[in-house]
Figure 1 (cartoon, rainbow, N blue to C red):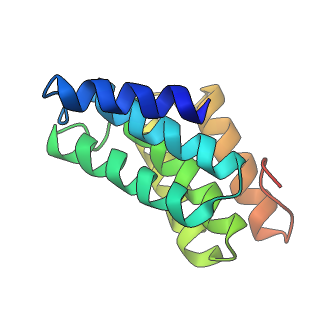
Figure 2: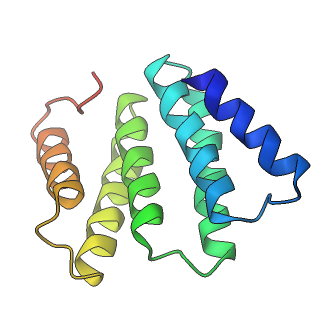
Figure 3: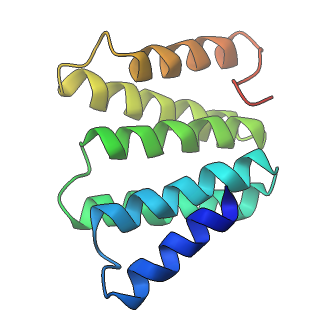
Length: 126
């Protein structure tokens, strides 16, 4: 999966689409792959890059941004950065709720992850 995301990132860069939604999705998708490989520091940088692109495109409160922020929250918790992870998950939940998606599977997943983290449990990846 990582190789495919990296290939997509390169294609978007070559096409001059480094500030597009598709590029941001590929960047944060590569963060997911890196997270799964336990390459946490690299994954964190990818999530941050994707989130920054969404913000640049005035999509900071979009579903895609909420997904990336929520996944970053899970990663931060996996890295032992509980407070940062909890804040990211809360922000992702707020984005979903502001979009009227309070009952969506994404919002529910982040809410469950947040509850587990606050009770000393693990995220969905660990």
